[in-house]
Length: 132
Image (cartoon, rainbow, N blue to C red; front, side):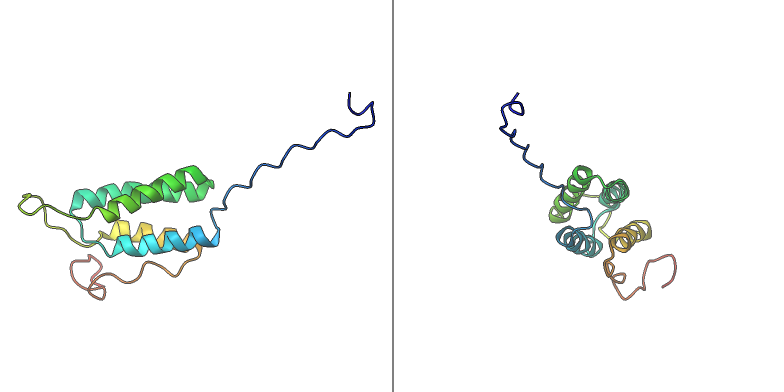
């Protein structure tokens, strides 16, 4: 009815734009996180957890799902910061990332245009199956 009276209706306020998955801050944070995670030495069960989270990050990037990307990134940060292992726990010894997780992290970094998580610990030699 305001139009009939010659008074324009107020325009609705625009919704804030969602943060871009490819935004520079998000990309830098993710590249840094991938590099940090690949430097960890963790028991095999922790690497399995990280593998699941790397899959979640990959899916979120593919789908452009900000909420899922944020959740998976936060979970990865928590695992990376909780790297203390109790002495005498009797579990398997911590080790570098398995090739599968290293490849997933490298794929994520490549997809967002980063430089990559870096070489394998020890200059690419050691217990890697590829003998690199």
